[in-house]
Length: 393
Length: 67
Image 1 (cartoon, each protein chain N blue to C red):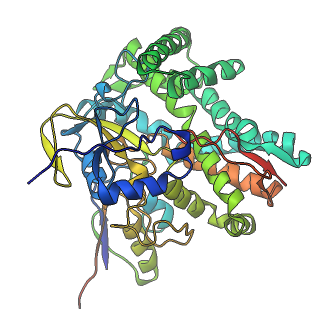
Image 2: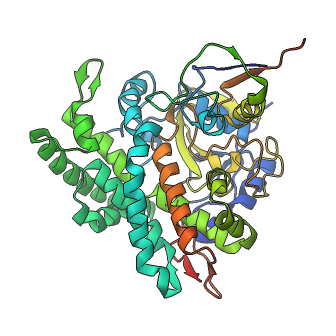
Image 3: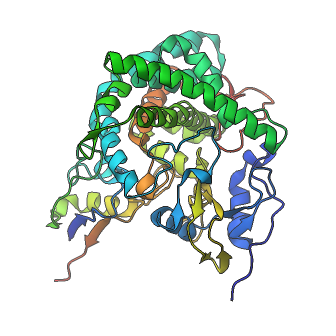
């Protein structure tokens, strides 16, 4: 016996919900594991929150498709390989995996360390900073623009374009759609210009490597290279910033955990994994169903848009011991902070390296810090950046 | 105790070679280097258990031998 998905008063789009999403996740899991939220971009979408259901969605791409109709982020062609299903997905993914493998990341670590040191030099003697503006945003975006091969002098323009897709200041769904589409066209224009230049003359950057990559023995089309670039543009300019925000915001409010990180840099990789679990800076991935199915006793029709709540799976009492406790010594941590299944975050090894180096250098120079007095943190819904992360020390 | 990685399930999260570097290594794509099932030396039993307990895809297969 199955019942249609109920509606919920939650939206997961309001800023006040984004401060403590973990308690909303718990309510959803316990009472409405398949639910229609009431937000403007979630209307008509089913949200799934239990670990078991999330794993099923991630591991069954033939039923829970990543086809580009699952989400609107300004692109007019599918983003490769994110919005492509197997078997097509696997070929492109295979060509891109080596770019982001741990062995490659070792090469980029010195440049990341050099840049974070420069950024810290700017603020260390001031006794205060906006960690988001001064550190968390410039570090990954500069590194990524350099790696991809976009002109570093235009990084502020790229950040504005990225925000125009991820956080458009729209008041209605229609306005949002128009804004995102217009911004998408500008991103295509930037990428087409740079790809054109690299096709004429290669440089030592990802775009040049992708241009020379072979899929089934054939070079990628110009559109394929641009579509990969579009995905990298959105993914590379936002997620590591939000992760760094979430991690440092947590540490600034939890002095025992902060002290442990400052005293013992060897714990940092474990702290990163545990805070990626608990905070889940990228809490949602979208899917769309290719056939009628059922989850947690609820029927799901073919063609349903699905919001897969990674953040909720990461705190589900059904599979985690003490999920609401942040424990750097957690023995078992199978978190889905980087998603799972065939679309596991391509940039996860780059993200981990950047987060580790940033936290090592920051705590070496500024070990003792806290939130500015009276500060109420502002987490953005969706990808959880904290743009008012004012720290004092 | 014996261990292997199910290469069908492995998605390259990298938790096994991070937590059990004496048992696993990354291949050139960042996935766990495929190897046949093999015995775990007793001094590496803790690493083996950690890899088993931290793979998000449950791709690390650990078999406790009963002798």
